[in-house]
Length: 399
Ligand SMILES: Cc1ncc(COP(=O)(O)O)c(C=O)c1O
Image 1: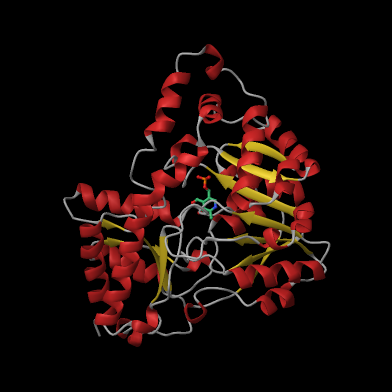
Image 2: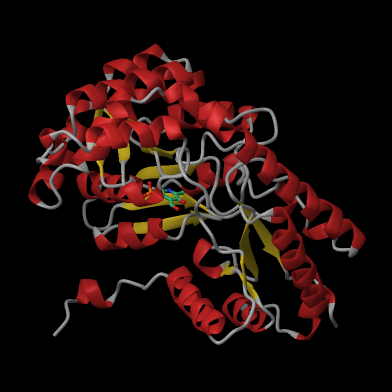
């Protein structure tokens, strides 16, 4: 009955584990949820007040243009040009979608022909390969590891480019590694891209406001604005404004790509949530920094606690300096717990299931392209986070 395309799409592992965690909670168990990909707080009142204000206007409930309201598209362009200090961005085009997941889906739909290859850097966000596959493309993975703080070598990226390569995705700050690539890495990457003038670069910047250790994230196109001719920037309000449920993402790219995305969008979802778009037109984006200041402090404290706990538990080799985003990747392949396992195989699903039995919900690394590891989220409040980490380390150090 089902199409091959539907049959070959994978279900989200995170969702599955979350359901299991919910079931255990309902049975009365205490489960520390370290899987969250969102802030457990309300957006700034400066934003919610704008939404409340829009509730009174008829036009806030009617279809928006399929690419989004002109004023908001312009505002995103202007704000991004200002934040990245690159004037050229303002003369590009912008389309608003139902969250940046939807933006990325339409980006792939606009650029991928059957068998086109897209390079992704591991660890990578789980949805990239699924979306690329959905549009008939294939992925080539460039690897990294904990010892280089999950930053792939530029030379490995060079080697991965083939005749079939259509695009490469840069996700900095990175989900799941919780790092952003350094300034020198971005400069080298910009230089590398000049060797391959046919390649498109997708820059997924959804975590760019969530840095908690200096220096802040920078982007390759800041060092060579000419690259913007073939750069597709994807961003959203989900993480920066604690608004994952409001579903607003946007893409900044050249007109031709934005128009193709608009055609796909107009025949599928139509324009994104009109009420939130209108509220955003009135919203002062510069207030995001102030709103996120305590969030950054909180995540930094949890990240520092990991370092201290790894040191105390003699697991220092599992530690790397996370700097941004919500997450931390734990490579368990060299922990005492893992000594009895066959290292040639991936056990991340199995280990995540065992951790859930002891009351900690994590996300297995396999689907992020990082076998024998798992992702934890740093957004939990300080005390439960510390309790969860203590349980985690007890598990990892048990022989
Ligand atoms: C790297 C990355 N990109 C894009 C998204 C999509 O976010 P949204 O659709 O909420 O904007 C996520 C969500 O977790 C993500 O981690």
